[in-house]
Amino acid sequence: MIQLPAYERDPFATSLETRILKRGEENGRPFVVLEDTVFYPEGGGQPCDFGTVNGVAVVDVQKRAGELLHLLAAAIPEGPASLKLDWARRFDHMQQHTGQHLLTAVAQDQFRWETTAFHLGSQVCDIELDAPSISPVDMERLEEAVAAEIRAHREISARWVSPEAYGQEPVRSRGLPEGHTGDIRLVQIAEVDLNTCGGTHLHHTSEIEALKLLGTESIRSGTRLFYVAGGRARRRLGAHEQRNAALRTLLGAPDEDLIPALQIKLEQLVALERRCRRLEEEVAEHLATALAARPGALVEAHLEGRDMAFLQKLAKGILGLDSTKAVFLTADGGGQGIFLLSAGEGSALDVPEVGKAMVAILGAKGGGTGKNFQGKAPNLTARARALAQFQTPQG
Image (tube, rainbow, N blue to C red; front, top):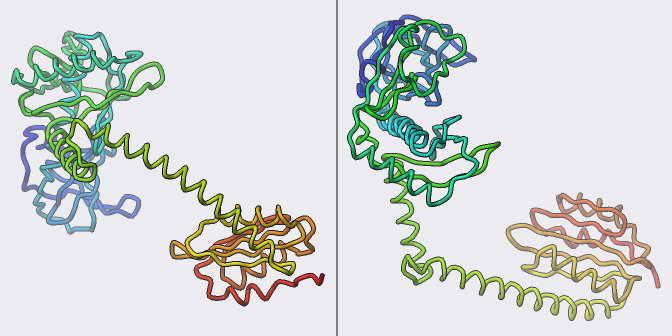
């Protein structure tokens, strides 16, 4: 592999004509090694590039023993290779990664917070700082300081230096990959930062466009700080605006009153749920009285639109009034049937045995122990046959 691949010579290159040097498979996935490439391999916290080689999708790019393996969706023959880069993905990665360099530099220089880790996610990025916590005021100050450096249009450049020269450079972080030998790549933001990095970056800080801090969470002895940069920030704002527009319509309130309006709706919902529970308890109580008064040792009923919690309340109420009875209750709702079998202390019904028989007849799943058995069935078309399984004790 050449020392400087195309993705490093020109990170803005989106296509390349080259040739295939080697073909093979890794874990059943075909790969090719190319003479030159515009595809960045995963590393340094930055995901790999996607795109196509001769029209076949590149699904991963990894470094293996000094080679770059381009893993493909399908095998391709040896010969010339026409590369097309997924530019939207690459540019997004460059905005997020360059934004991280700038955010790290400003956090350390102005707040003395050192970055200990970086993660470039598919939706949100984060850095881990050695700060115990970050107040909202400090977050605002940090974001404003980063915005000032973005507006300053600082030049961003990369260069290779020898290990000897590296020791003389004012590098912010001197961490190198384990086992690294030879020259070292430095990425510089003019007048702001100099750091070791093998990733792809923008030409100027202004190309970051914007960087928005989203929030923090405590992690180990530090703080994880979440952010989005560039196009992600604009897309996120667009999604928020669409969401707010929908909420304005649903709640009939302007943006500044959405939260109070939602709080009122939630309070009303909680009150309605409490009232509904009280009414349901009253219905269960009255229905239990009526059902318990029926003659015979078995009480059976089918109730439309009720859930298992209601059936349990009803059964408890019936057996509380007459512990010599057994109860078989069913309900149909949500596209499936449910059933409950319960027996009072004075009932001779073998609940587990009858319950297992009902499961087989209804094609249901269920279980229980002692005096209670319940389950769910695809439907209740066989309810009458299941009911026939009861052997009602003679009074």
